[in-house]
Amino acid sequence: MAEAYSALALLRHGVTGRSWTPMWRERPLERGYPVVIIGGGVHGLATAYYLAANHGVTNVAVLDKGYLGGGGSGRNTAILRSNYLTVEGVRFYDRSLELYRGMASALNFNVMFSRRGHLTLAHSDTSLRTMRWRAEVNKASGVDSEVIGPDEVKRLVPEMDTSATARYPVLGALHHPPGGIVRHDAVVWGYARAADRLGVHLHQHTEVTGIEVSGGRVTGVRTNRGPIATPVVLNATAGWASTVSDMAGVPLPVQTFPLQAAVTEPVKPFLRTVVVSGTLHVYVSQTARGELVFGASVDPFASYSTRGSLEFTEGLAGHVLQLMPSLAKLRLLRQWAGLCDMTPDFAPVMGATDVAGFFLDVGWGTYGFKAGPVAGEAMAECIATGQTPEIISAFGLDRFAQGRLVGEKGAAAVGH
Amino acid sequence: MILLPCPWCGPRDADEFGYAGEIRPRPDPSTTTPAEWRGYLYLRRNTAGWTRERWFHRMGCRRYLVLERDTTNNDVRPSTDASSGSGS
Ligand SMILES: Cc1cc2nc3c(=O)[nH]c(=O)nc-3n(C[C@H](O)[C@H](O)[C@H](O)COP(=O)(O)OP(=O)(O)OC[C@H]3O[C@@H](n4cnc5c(N)ncnc54)[C@H](O)[C@@H]3O)c2cc1C
Ligand SMILES: [Zn+2]
Image 1 (cartoon, each protein chain N blue to C red):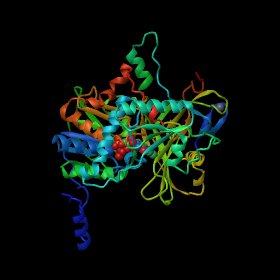
Image 2 (tube, rainbow over the protein chains, first blue to last red; image 1 turned 135 degrees about the horizontal axis):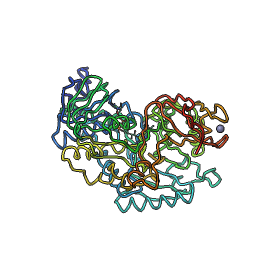
Image 3 (tube, chains in turn brown, blue; image 1 turned 120 degrees about the vertical axis):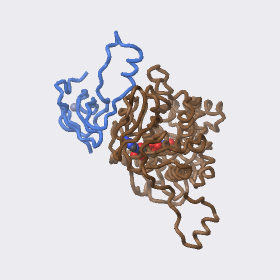
Image 4 (cartoon, rainbow over the protein chains, first blue to last red; image 1 turned 90 degrees about the horizontal axis):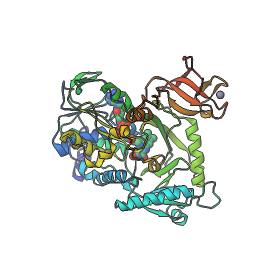
């Protein structure tokens, strides 16, 4: 078993020079598991961990066709917040923030959660109006969220061009102090290590190629390493969600779009908060290492290709400089893309389906990293008890056939 | 840069086009059920591979066109279907 991390262990390893044991084990692939989770991102791993930790269901396999955290979970910009627009969204994401706050000690792993505040800029009266609305919904749910004026924005981010002559003047912002950033890889590894310690099997390079359904029930999955018998399958494959759901014959309201991001060379810390501008399709934060991380909205057309584009970099640079002209001399180090499973209402698709034993935790779009903990907790409960937890009851697949969409677009299109 | 074949303007930068999504059969509004209609509105095949889709040449001839694209690598070819480019 992986050893516990502590100051004492650090000292011991420092003095003896002994290397650390791997964070999780390679185990043999068994012929059957009571629960198979497809997708080793934060959602699949968190579900496995909470199944074991909260419900005592430890005989769980997580299968990933690549490596753990190789999907969106290792490519996102790690922004955490709960200032959504709908009541269902706010309480859901707020529970996730709560789990993030206690995560380092719960998982015995430093996930570097940095609560540094989150600013969404308003450049027009319409967005200011949406922000007032959001602030009221947030406050009614007990979430710290307030509309502030340009002077206050300038005080929080002195580098920002808040002049009235800017091409898109800053009229105000929605300020959300509990928002922040986290170290995304650490969250993935922390859940993987904790799940492994509880007995969960993590199988990398294991691709699911088919799902066996007989008499309306899941009976197993086919993989590139052979068949596995199982009565329960969770689809937690984000950008690939449609390809996996097709195997079970469950059509999804999902379209896969690439989302790109980029980082600059590291510089002295100066940017304390996360800054988002929906109008300019850009957001920025500064990592603990000093790099500026930039992101945008999704690429203009659906695709499974993760190739970056010059159009993105050009647009990004132009927009960043409109916000903070003093960044003109910074150099970009690299850019990358990940796949986002977009839904029509910018809300996830979670819970059971018409195929017994086939569960969904998909539709995470550009905003699903922050939801990993609460989604894992809720999906674990859903699978272990067979009941849909109240906190995800608005997010069922049946809402589309019934015309009960959630309507989170106003708070999720750019500010992931 | 990705080039899209416009039947009227020839190959052009994808930036000139608006993406109108995969082509899917539209149920007859006079006989469809609400659930079936919502399926048409919201469900997508979201194919990983070759798919037929509609684009709008907004910075060119401003006409709709149909083409085929491999969504795994963005290779593009003109639609082999006879209705290609007939718009709608
Ligand atoms: C550039 C970018 C920035 C983002 N910024 C933010 C942000 O700031 N805040 C936020 O909350 N969210 C953000 N997101 C969204 C977030 O990254 C995702 O919603 C989230 O990581 C989804 O996690 P997941 O575990 O569901 O899926 P993933 O981490 O994508 O994992 C899915 C896994 O499934 C595996 N898989 C697929 N098909 C199969 C198969 N057939 N068999 C076996 N395994 C398979 C893949 O290999 C992959 O590892 C961003 C995304 C991107 C791309
Ligand atoms: Zn044209």
